[in-house]
Image 1 (cartoon, one colour):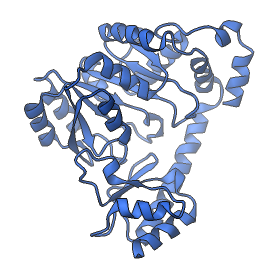
Image 2 (tube, rainbow, N blue to C red; image 1 turned 45 degrees about the horizontal axis):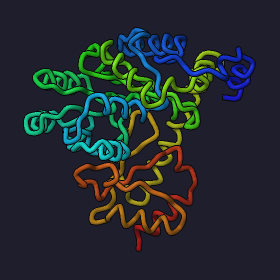
Image 3 (tube, rainbow, N blue to C red; image 1 turned 45 degrees about the vertical axis):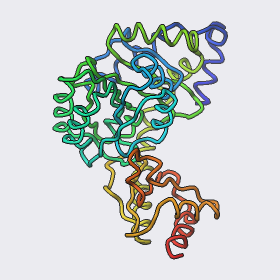
Image 4 (spheres, rainbow, N blue to C red; image 1 turned 90 degrees about the vertical axis):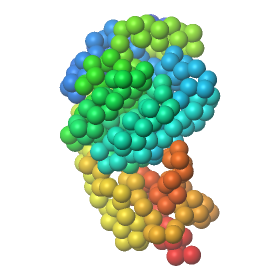
Length: 337
């Protein structure tokens, strides 16, 4: 980040002073197109629009495709902020149970029939909060079911660079027909560097660009220029190799420490930072989280991620934030109370 910032500070004045173009920095969109092609997602630069973040990407898509009262499918469990964002758009969220291979296909089909949803928002790579990955079989079945509906799928790919081996991408199978592919670099580079993107079919990108101009005008150029420098001139590939190695190490240690106090992972993630864990029988995650909070340890109880509130005995752990032994000492005391 510091190397990239120094390089951008020496750039032409327009980089530091001007609005970005409506679609965003051309060189960065070209790079993103090449990166997506590595996952078999074909998205030419003119079908990629930069945003201020992954969250803004989803917000713009919701503004474009949803009306108040529409139904949106989400994974159950899913990233908790999806719930808040959908409430802000005054739409109905319906949860689809998530399995170790992706959404439950039978439940997904039933939800399509019952609710006629407009959107489905998911992670195909590393799923948040479970750490699971979509399988090719589930991806094909999912898209087959969607063919007979008006459903649009929003594929959030924010964790792509943490993968050791890429999971299937719905956008690759679909060719950006009914799938919108989004991402950002807040987890791999910096949460302070606000830059995301949307890849979608050309006519949708035109409408989304109009919405972006209406809500944030041209957007910021500086973040895109810094991001481009980070991705191309600052050792990003080597950085991510090191990050993946460190995450694998701390994930193993986190799971070992949790199992020692009776907390078992729902599955052992192949990569990433999240581990979704089942508490001992009869233990309520919200109560445990409140108890630990009194001792300065913040935990993420399962029902914060569950639309159906069916994850009351689960906790999500971020292995990268679980390196302090005090986390497990406080948790063990709370479980024994």
